[in-house]
Amino acid sequence: MKEHPLQSFDYNISESNIGKHPAEPRDMAKLLVYDTQKDEVHLDRFYNLANYLPSHSLMVMNNTGVIPARANFTKDTGGKVEGLFLYNEGIQDDGTIPVIVMKKLIPGRELTIADYRFKILRQHHQYFYLLPLFDIALLPQVMIQYGTTPTPHYLGQLDLEESQLRDRYQTIYADEKKSVAAPTASLHFTERVFERIAERNIERTEVTLHVGMGTFADVSEENIKQRRLHTEPLAISLSTILKLREAKKTNQNIIAVGTTAIRTLESQADIILDKTLNDNIITSTDMFIMPGFDFKLTDSLITNFHVPKSSLMALVQAFLDHKKAKRDLISLYKLAIENEFKFYSFGDSMLIL
Image (cartoon, rainbow, N blue to C red; front, side, top):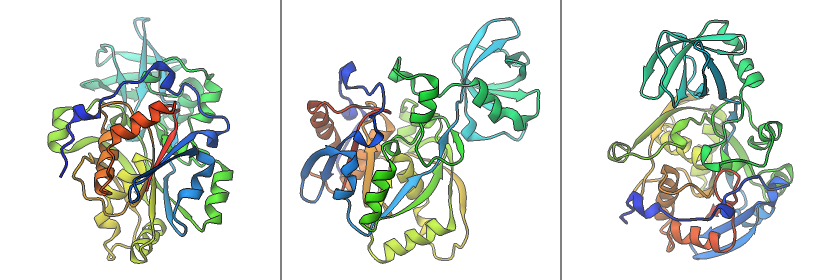
C-alpha cells in the first residue's frame, strides 16, 4: 500500500486559479478525464462527459439541496454575530438547532433574526445549540427569508449576488434542501448532459447525503487515527439499492458523482449488497476514506478540484490507488493548473475511469 501523508496533498495555486463564478452555461466547465487503465489524460468540456463514460453504466448522484444557512444574529446586548445553521444535523431531542459561531456567546442569553428570537441553551466547542422561541416549523422559512447562501469562506468575495448564488450554488435536480454546502461535482450537469448520457444507455439514480461542516473542517490527527469525520445524515431508497445490486451482479460500471455520493455508497456497501435487506437505508456516516480503503461499489468518479490537505483529496487519492493508477492526485492537479483549470466549489471537473 502506498503511503500518502496529509502533507503530500499540499499544493499552491494563484488567485486566478480559484473559481469565483460558475461556468456559463454550467456544462461549459472544463473536464479533465483520466483513464487509469490506459494511463491517458484528455482535456475537454463537461458537455462532452458522455463521450468518455462506459455505455450501460449506472450513475449515482446526491440529490441534496443547499439551504441559505448563514445568518446574521443580533445579540440581546445589541451586538452583531454571524452564525451558520447546521440544518443537516436536524432538530435535536431538546428542540434546539446547532449553529456554528466563531465568537463567544453566553448560554442563557438570546439572539434574534428580525422578529424571531432564539435562546442559547448550551455550547459544545464552537457549536451553540439555539432553542427557537417560535414555532420551529417556521425555521426553514426564516432561513430562506433572512439567511444567505453558505459558500465556503476560502472562496473569498464572489462575483455573484445572493439571488444568483441561490440558483448557481445548487444542482438542477436538488430535492430536500438541508445541506450547508453543495455537492459541487453535480453543479456542472445540465439537461443537455443528461440527454447525452441517456443516449448512451446510462441510467441515473439518486442517494441523499446532507452535507455538513465535515466537508470543510481541517483534518486533525484524531481524524486520521480514528478514520472518522463529522457525522452527516444519509438516505438510500430501496429502488436505488436494487439497481446497485443488479449493477454489481451484471458487472455494470457504477459512476459516483462527487465525494458525497461515494461516501454514501461506500459507507453502506455491505448493507446494500446484503440481499436480506428489503427496505430503505436511513442512517448517517462519519467515514473518513483514506488511501488503503477497499472500494466495493464505485468504479468511476466525477469530482472537482479540492482544497489542499483536505479529506476530499485523501478520498480521491484513495480511489486512484484502488484503480492502480500510475499517476497520483498531485500530478493531475499540476496538469490542471498548467492548463488553467479553475479549482474549488465553482471550479472545473475531473473524471476518473
